[in-house]
Image 1 (cartoon, one colour):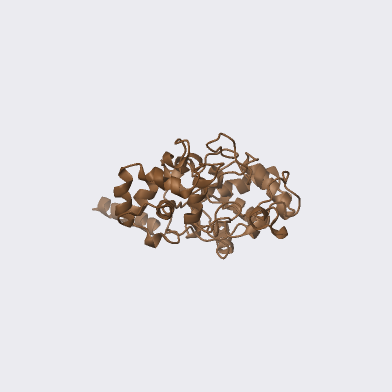
Image 2 (cartoon, one colour):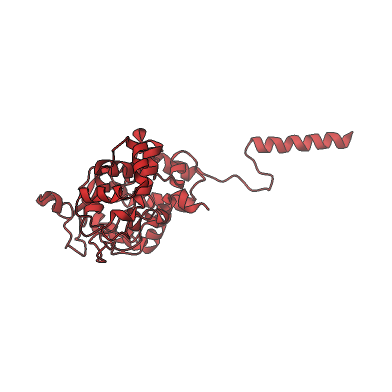
Length: 334
């Protein structure tokens, strides 16, 4: 009887410890006060990545399926060996990890290929904002003589019509006799609108204080303290404004004049879309010309050029550790 009572009392104590958040191994619960303070500070500045991109409410399964096939379609290049995925590789976080990508002529272009993941959340497309949305962006590389080099939209349509299986796919997606350039780019945009990533920083913003480590939160604190949030805010931590590259000190290469090449306005010289920091660790090399391999070096350069902030190697390492919490879970989970 006494053994039974002792067993019951012991079981009750264990239950109470579990319910109260205690531990039976003698270790005190983790103090998350610092993480809670930083979370409260950043809540007004950042947001978790939404589940759906703007426009996706109109996307059908048939259009997404068609768009995925077109995204990998090499017939949309003049040599028949390049697709959208060549430079925006889905398996590599939506990039090719080259400084700049080669066109079908084998010549590297002037700008780094940005990631296609989460691109539909950006306020404009391309480094210089020359496309308003994913539909407009999708057609650009196909017709660009330095990229996929199809001479005109009619030639692109003819190439797709020459592949028999597309007739059924377009009919399912858009109706009969619907193979045209507008529907090609619309289908590709529908597929790209499925390329959403979520990460550990999202979970932290949603209240899971243990999802990122205290050291990573220290990097976030430095990110705030060094004023990186001046341009990198919102759900994308960027991609919602233009900014001059070399605001305080000029960038080392001034041959690319950025948005000026689109508008011709003097105030747009060296203005580029602020890149998103989502998946930034996976999508190097960095800057519009892909000239810097190291994320830490990029952080130091940005502090100096843009913010008149001195960032030490140690501080850059801590900020980089925070930025790595935005690696999409689809790339980090086996």
